[in-house]
Amino acid sequence: MFWRKSYDRGKTLAAAEKARSRGRVRKAVRCYLKVLEHDPADHVVRSKVAPLLARVGRWDESRQNFDKAANGYLDAGFTPKAIAVWTVAAQTFPEQVEYWERIANEQVKRGKRQDAVLALLQGRSMLRSKRQRPLAVLLLRQVLELEPGHVDATIDLADQLRRDGTSDEAKRLLAGLLVRIGKVRSLRRRVRFAQFRIDPSIRGVLDWALAR
Image (cartoon, rainbow, N blue to C red; front, side, top):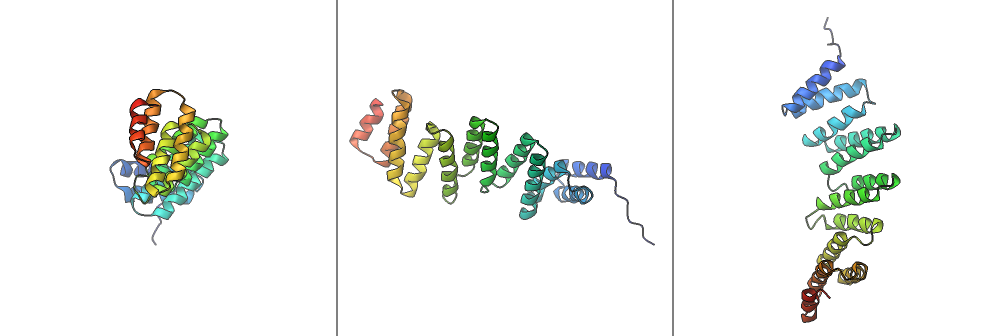
């Protein structure tokens, strides 16, 4: 008769942590998943195994575990922990911008609009290729919904629109920003340069040089 090895939570977790610290990702994944077989509601373990699953190419399982961990924390009233899980998920899957959107929405609910803006900008910073431009534009638009006068986001969005050939909207954004910033020369010079890139002209050079 063959006896099945008994499950010891403490030893299994210790083995998982040891494997993870030594870079033995697949073994760590096996151990963490074994713990979850016995305790599916362990959000801490789910949040640990999720990024490791991505590292071994198990993308769908990774996202599922990120989602379950974050939702578990939310249901338990631990919003900051849910946000922490979403942050790792967003960094693991930069093009899954809904993670940044969830973070921003929760921060707004908590009255932390500036943190919401920072989250969206962090997400945008991870989207640099031409193929990712529509996602970057999506996040920048949401930044401006929260903070219409955000200088960096407005200039960035105008530049992305320029690259996409949507110059008219880019011009409107920059014209509106110019009104918002008033007579601050350093800011006016930045906006004027952005305008010059859209519509190069002698007048544009003078507007930039004189910050008028």
